[in-house]
Image (cartoon, rainbow over all chains, first blue to last red):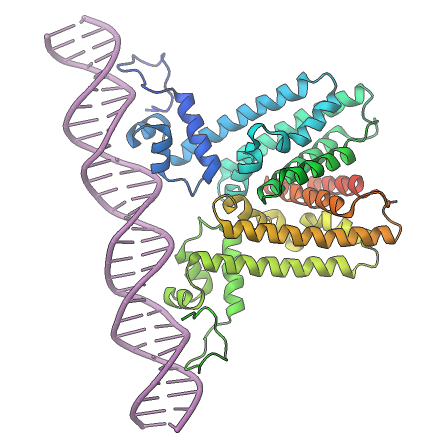
Length: 208
Length: 208
DNA sequence: GCAATTGTTGACCGCACGGTCCATCAAACG
DNA sequence: CGTTTGATGGACCGTGCGGTCAACAATTGC
C-alpha cells in the first residue's frame, strides 16, 4: 500500500532503491526553498532530484506530500541546528544574541537570499493549507520553548533580569528574528541588516 | 496603443467604461491578498471583478501588470494610512507604539488573517520578480523614512533619548512589526500576539 | 535459471491555465 | 438616424501542468 514508507522490514525487497532518499529530499527542499510551492513544477522536481516522475510518485506520493516531507526535513534540520546553537554556547545570553543575529550570520547568506523555508511556506500557504499551518504552529511552538529555556538559563546565569517572563521574551526574540528575515528579503544590504540586528539584540537583551 | 491608460483626454471616447476602475482594482487586490499571486487564476480575477477576460486585459494588461497595479494600490493606501497615523497623534511616541501594534489592532483582524499584501508578495515573488522586489524596496524605504521622521519628532518632544539614531530605530521598529505579522500568520492567538507586541514596543521604545 | 516482486522510466492523459480574438453592443457626434 | 469608436464578453487556443500507467530492469528466493 504505502510505498512512501520504504524500509527493509516490511515484506521482502525485490529491488533496492537506486537513490539516496535523504539526498533527494534535500534537493527537493532546496527547489521549494528557491521558488516556493506553487511556482515549482513537477518538471523542476524531476530535474533536481534526478528521478523520473514515476519514481518520485512511487517513493513519496504526490507533490503536496513531497512538499510536506521536504518541509519536515527542513524544520527537523534547522531545529537541530537551533538546539545545538542554544546549548553549545557557554553562556546562554550569547546564544540568544546569536539566535537573533542568525538571519545575518547565516553561512553563505542563504537566509538573506531565500529566507527561511518555514516562513516562506507560512506566508504562501498557511491560510489555505491546514497541514502547512499545523507545521508552522508546531515549529513556532517548539522554537519558542527552546528559546524560552535559554532565556531561563541566562537568568540563572545572572545575565538577564529575573523580572521578565522567559516565554514572553522568547516570543519577542522570535518576532525580531523573523522581522530581520523579512527585511533581508526586501534586498536590504547586509551591513545595514547587521546593524539593525545588533540594535534589536541590544534592546531586547540588555546585559543584566 | 496603451489602453491601460484610460483618460478622457486622449482622443475621443466612443464608449465610457462600465465599471469603476478603482473598485475593480480593490477587488483584484483582495483576491491576490487572500490567495497570493500564483494561486490566483484568471478565472478568479474575472469572478471577483465582474468583468470579462477581454475587458480585464483591455483595461489593465496581463495578470502580472494587474498584480503590480493592485500592489501599488495597496502600498499607496496603506502608506496613506501610515502617514496619517504617524502625523495625527499628538505625541509621536504614541504613534510609534501604534505603529508596532498595528498588526494586532488592525480593524477586523485583517492583518492577522491574511497578513500584509506587500510582505506576502515579497516572500512569494521578490526573489524571482524584479518589479515586486523594486516595489518592496520602495515601500520599505518610504516606511523607514516616515517612521524615522516620527522618531525624530519623539526625540524633539523629549519622549525618546537623543543618543539613538532615528533611522536605525525605525528599522528596528519595522522589523518588530513585520515579525508580529509573521507570528500572526502562524495562527498565534490574538491575546498572546498582543502581549508580544506590547513587550516589543516597551523594549524598543523606552519612555525617555 | 526461473518466477515473483518491486523499482524505474518516459510516454501519455485530461485538464485548467494564461492569453487572444472577434462578433456584438452602446455611447458620442454630425 | 447613421457612422464611428471603443468597450464587452465569451468562444477559442496552445501550452504546461499534475498525475497515471504499462513496459522494462533489477534483485531475491527457490
